[in-house]
Length: 370
Image (cartoon, rainbow, N blue to C red; front, side, top):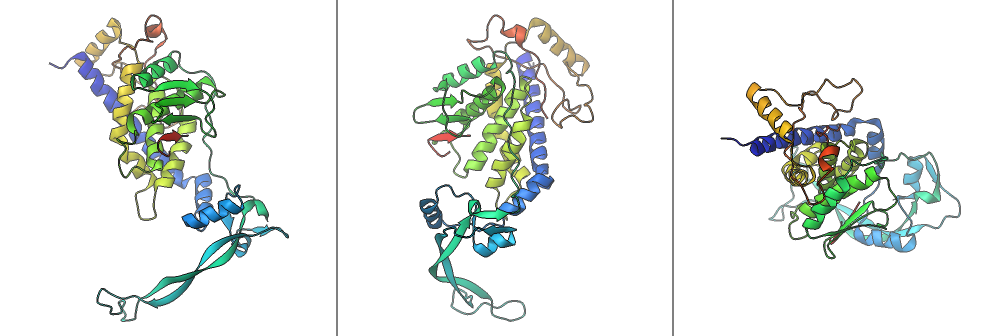
């Protein structure tokens, strides 16, 4: 016999899977949006500098952000100002020569012609300039993840804090540098900026909860680059806050898209593929957090769930979404279930009174920053 908690868990996981699939689809479609397209075309046109050259650039101009040669800047519609001091980096000296096979014989193409390859035979000093040293056409900017404003769902901060502390971390508010929050695995500390609205703070805390569960140095997957790590943590935050009625899509979509783009390679998976690949880990982590942050269902809710199972309809059917609604808000294809909830020490008394059924929305080691 299937128990009520088992039914509720099945419904919850099905809902999380649907939400994650919609998140991947929405973020993947951002490739075609004009703002992302303009930024990617521009950013991808810059030369990728080696580690040594990156150090040289930093040593000569620490504030540099975008670096290119004199002619390259002219091609982008900008002109290096007269009197600007060049940044010196190493440029390759190359030579074309026949490509050889393992036996030292020239490799030939389909027409029988020797295949040529370019080989670096030395380096020379090259002058480049930062964008701050140029004037001209305005540069496109990547879409920004805008911080949430307003109030957080009542009690959600306390519930998330209790959950993170149960994982062996302390939680505090304070300076996070240029990040909204940090998770430090060495000191076992999670910190959230003190100067942001409650909605942004609780979303950030859910993000850090994702890091605490998924990204300890000893547990992190070998292939999980920083981009994938941030995609996972923000996806967890998106689904946790959505389950508590807070729509974080205005922040999450651009945040996830930005990090997913960093994780892509020319011949590798797409942005949507990267987000989809995180699905099982994200859903498992989200489910653990939701079990600890949503209170136990009332007897009435349990009775309604039992009735819904008997007559084959969802407990809380969703009305069709408005034409201008976000794809993850009020989607008629995803029912809003009565969720199985587990109390925590901070969720007694008034906790049940303030909870509502979930609404659908739309670093380096040892510390991770966002």
